[in-house]
Length: 390
Image 1 (cartoon, rainbow, N blue to C red):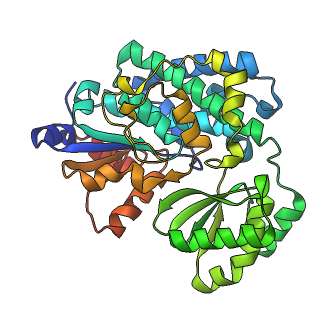
Image 2 (spheres, rainbow, N blue to C red; image 1 turned 135 degrees about the vertical axis):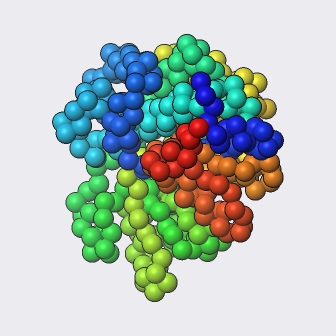
């Protein structure tokens, strides 16, 4: 294999890559359809469909999977795939997003980035929300049959993570009254997660506290700040009724300041205590069919926590740690990507998608700190050409 120019130059100049992976809310099916046409990914997709078939044989009759788990037929005939609402459902979108970003990674590794060389050239890895699980898989540095075995284990893990998250929040259909009240505010597609763009961290924390205190929102009615994405962009997780109450309380101020309030395409309130019982459910009902022997000591490159920024190489078995990080604990993106700011050897960020959402979030931090680094996303056709150029 001829090595890509970017990889060769990075190694020759003793520079490093930062690899990152995206999270929930990104469209993925169109990207998967394109990737499916790549001959180098034949074995990858065969492994994917075999693993999903094993999951469907065990849990395919669950009401949460009422339109199936047949990614093969959806990819081969996207016009006949379920609608976007079903594809956004956690037990569907979490494995769908994971498949897409790992397919991007495998394609890059087969077109000029041999695994051993890519690992050698990588200073650190992380992923936004569920992307941290993809970063742990890649951090293992496995190749060939060993990689496909680990990928299959991880694919089962991410499915059951999304599945158990949805079990904790099974009533994800939003009532007509809440839909209408949101429409009256000019807001579409209410969901249990919403992006609030404009406030600083302190300003938003103050307003969330005032809403919870003044309206007596406690327990499962509480509004949580779940993802601290950039200095002025954060996510709230809560019941749609509680998010609506927050919106009503602060809409006039947000309109005056031209701040944004945008619901995410998701069906569960990730990254907050609402999901606390999901790990116990997983361990009681599904963990026995998810092989996951992977530990921090198995990671060949530093993989950074999205909760507190620590290096996962210091941890034991990674299964429950990753589960809690994605479903229960808040995300602090600045901590996960801190090596980009602190390690002068890291010169290039390679994002494996899906879409360009996580690339933009990292860009928001770079801009705020007035730092310039090359940033390339494999989901962007033009930037993929730069990544693969020989």
